[in-house]
Amino acid sequence: MPAASDSVKQNAIYNAAVIHANKEDYAKAIALLDKAGALYPNNKDIWSLAGQTKFQTQDYKGAVAALKHALELDPQDATNHQFLFLTLNKLGKPGSKEAEESVTEYTIYKALSQGTKKDPKVWVDSADNRLGASNQLKTVFKAEGYPEEVYTYSEENKTFETWFFWSKGKSFTFMEGQIFSKGAFPPKKSS
Image 1 (spheres, rainbow, N blue to C red):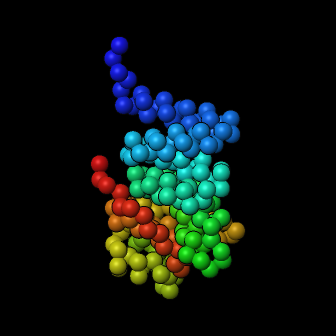
Image 2: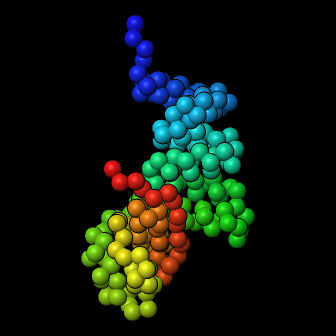
Image 3: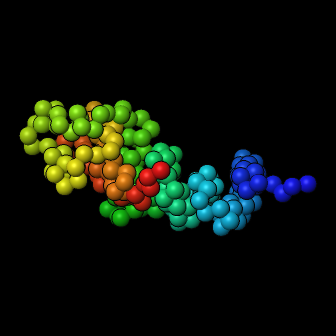
């Protein structure tokens, strides 16, 4: 009988870990995921599940490491940004680096999961008309150029827009035209 393909093995390990996690046998799930992560360092799903499972067990430092690795593999995954936000929020005290980073992860998550995608050139070029001349968008535009993607969303009667520079590994979120947060993540490799 031929040996199982690598993708079949990865799926089997992932599914077994999901079953253990669903039964709340987190120790077995994490043991499987840690082994799988060592064997398959480029499998985003394994690393994502490892981060989420470690979050459930309150291994926040382990969750951060796994989720950051998953985001190295795909910086556009909204769920991983959400869990990284939640994890950093547990680790950070007000004013700490973790608390600041959690705000950034939250804005990225909100933009990717609930935002409305805009045409970057049209959106950037209309900034003064939309926000007035004192907006900070033009400063970012002068330094970085046009973003690769722009998403807008509203929260608590405030308008937010997030500019993604995926190939540079940067994001900027503006609240009503003023810089609210800046994100850094591994640059997305072109396919």
